[in-house]
Image: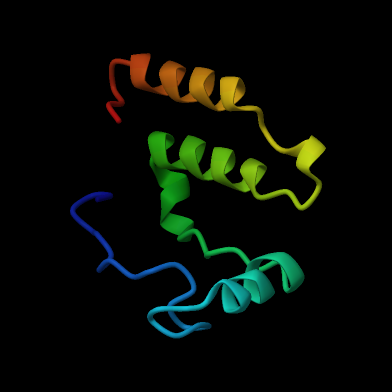
Length: 88
């Protein structure tokens, strides 16, 4: 919810695969086509969502060595949670 605006829930890749996709269908979309769910531009206007979207994108790198570690994710989210103006 950003300024009272929220999106209706949709499954990731809802417009690319059936509602109950097989492993092979998901493998094609994610591993071969390297597609990721879109992140709404309006998330950039909210500090918490901006940070979370950055973490998400850094977890999506095709090269596993370039992805964030679990410890880095934990620390980033803990720092975000510690900010007085932002609660996640």
